[in-house]
Length: 204
Image (cartoon, rainbow, N blue to C red; front, side):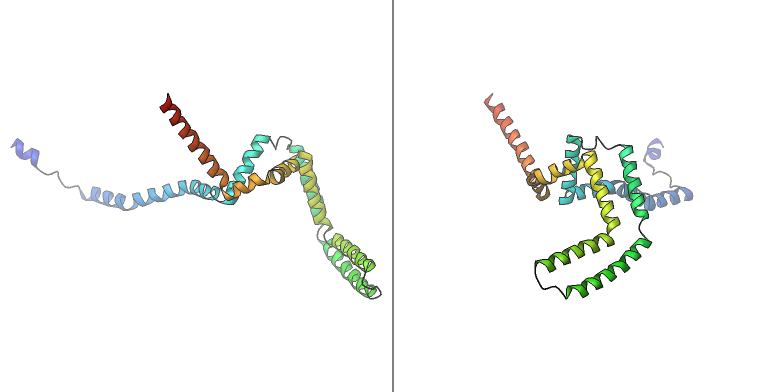
């Protein structure tokens, strides 16, 4: 009797337990796979972007900014000054753009009529260049002031010198980073150090 009880199969699950097991077996793994994929998606995207040329350059510039402490002079007061200037210049856009466009058309027509009196030469070229500069300033005055404000902000906080040094002075290193040669050189250096350590150990 004891042997028969030990070798007997377990009792079948009840109807409710069978439904719970079947439902968990269908939906739970799918939910876990989806949840795991969503959690790993930012890491996969980051690794994929950093493997591209733009990602390598971004990582290099970020590391250079940390090494040179490029954002040391960026504070709240300088940012507020920049925002106020941008708001002032942006508020001048609107009706002034339409008026400038109409004035530019009148000036362009007058310049074309007066240009017939000039012969092709230095005077005519200088007149056309000056007229183009005036028309450009009248049409893009606000955009030019905004761009000048941004450049002035970069110069004030020292980011312009950082960008000049990293993008122009170190342009050869930046090109190596873009093409992936910098990572290959680091891997070769690590491999060389490993080979040197093994040789030293054998010699000892």
